[in-house]
Image (cartoon, rainbow, N blue to C red; front, side, top):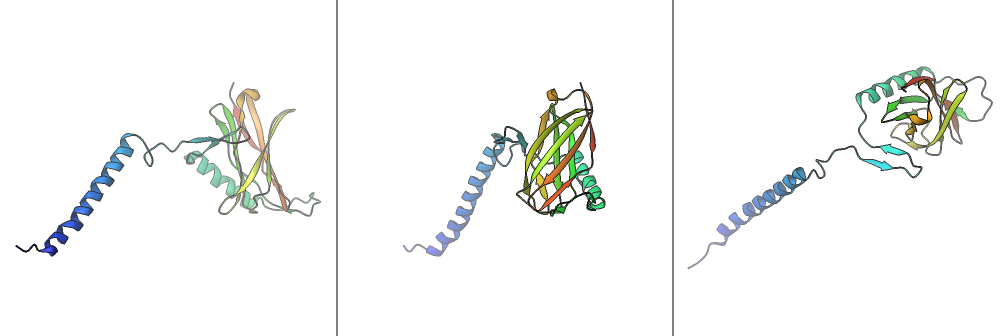
Length: 186
């Protein structure tokens, strides 16, 4: 009796495809049930070596809107300061977000006038004669320079309205933002 080998080959390829589909479906089901990647929550927080938390969550609608508003203000406020006597270029600095979240005053800032990873952002939060200052490293984004997000615990601040200002300084450029008022609750 002669066995037809082409009939066997016709069944082998569909059997392999069906087996792969079953295994893939099983892995996806397992990942979904155990809340593993890609189904896990995207709210992971990593520790920064400086001790500050880095929020890797996608931006909220409020952050996106504040960022767009800051970019519009930055485009209108990029004229050099006449009192600057430096060889550095003057760039506009925008505050993308400044507000209280999770018991911290959080500040996110950027400058789209220069793309530089060797700059330093200085965040100054002041109320009357009291000032709190933090520095953050700058890093390169696709089309701008971003400041590492800064969080100041509200326990370091008294209740009331605080003024937030960000300055950027690098070997080739410098600039500062407009002042943004943030309300800290008691």
